[in-house]
Image (cartoon, rainbow, N blue to C red; front, side, top):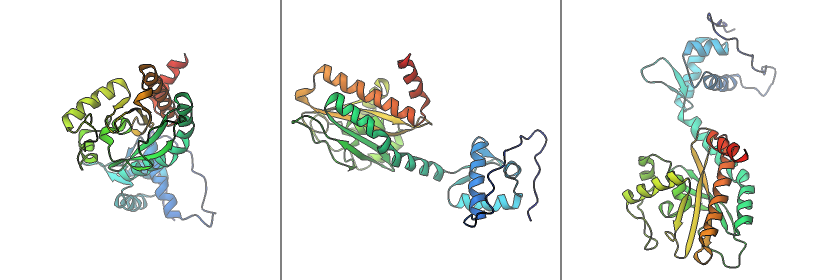
Length: 284
């Protein structure tokens, strides 16, 4: 039987987790490892070994062995120069993957609303590893429509509003990694030099949306904006595309307004506080 580590002076009593030992399907070591991860998160993302033992009512030796396994798998990490344990990068990877699995389902009604309001083709994309991936497409309602790409890896993030809406909020080294295969020219308006792209992405950040004015396909204009999660991290983007023959100033403004409103609302669903504040301001 394990010794119970009693809370030190001033420590807050922690509600007991549900009792699962009677469940024949319960694997105790897995249960304890997951409980440790939950406890690190509840402690603010970092905690000492003693604090974790206190909060979980496990002995220090058990905590240490479980943490060693979690560190080996990337789910926990030691904080350099300090006696602290933190959540590992693998947690972020799984979290982003979970969001991207859920993203097409949540985005469906927003894509439909944009499609109805503008009549144009609507795309949803997400960043997966070093690639921008198109996850869903809603075709235009007009007889004359544009074909701006199908579901799968995007070949031209630097030349599309979807790609630029995502790239604009990434660190430069991550942008360069995504564009490591080069910036191919598709039209005479395609940006093919990294410094020029950086300057254009500053405009995207300032405006809150991205434009593709025939940079990927001649005669096609696209508007895109980013979707964020609870940490403010960009997890995807939505765009609308129209032939230049319909791209009046009023129509582009309509596309922009519908895209920005949809991405803000979807970001608020994913917990983005900035988007929630924007939604409340509009409502008031």
